[in-house]
Amino acid sequence: MGSKSTGLFSAGARVTITQSDLETVRSAVGSVKDPEYPDLTINQLGILENVVIDASSIRVDLVPTILGCPALGIIEEDVKAAARGLGHEVAVRFCRSPVWTPDRISEDAQQILANEYTIAITPRSGRTQCPVCGTTSLEKRSDVGPTACRSVHWCANCRNPIEVVRSREASDQ
Image (cartoon, rainbow, N blue to C red; front, side, top):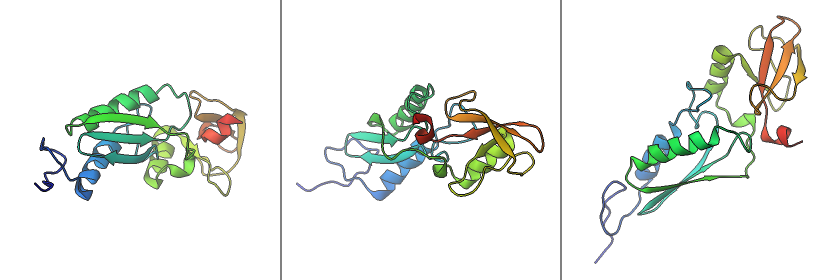
């Protein structure tokens, strides 16, 4: 008796997982909203690392922005709920490697963070730009902001407090 290609959503004895199945799962879990930024998904924030599926289970690998982030439990439950809706057992794994950096945030998410939340991203090369006035006249005032993944800066030009997304590497130093 040969393997029956029934796809992810059936309860057949043997299942062949297709690229389409993987994309369906990745889309479902990638669309989970971040609890801190409800306009953004974990995919846009670069938290979703990998999805592995087989005939009976789904494993989702996530890269936390900061180890010990209090939102990780909420994200884990939301990811499990999104994947469970596809009819399989779900495991979520938080990866220590690769290390999350702000470079993982998509360009559209960076724009939303700047425009809706007044949060800046430090580019790998160059200086951090104020999301209010566009200058690079930012001075760090505190390593830790309202959350461990953001530091607080002050813009000398427009005189606004600005939060800047920090990398896990920066928080471990």
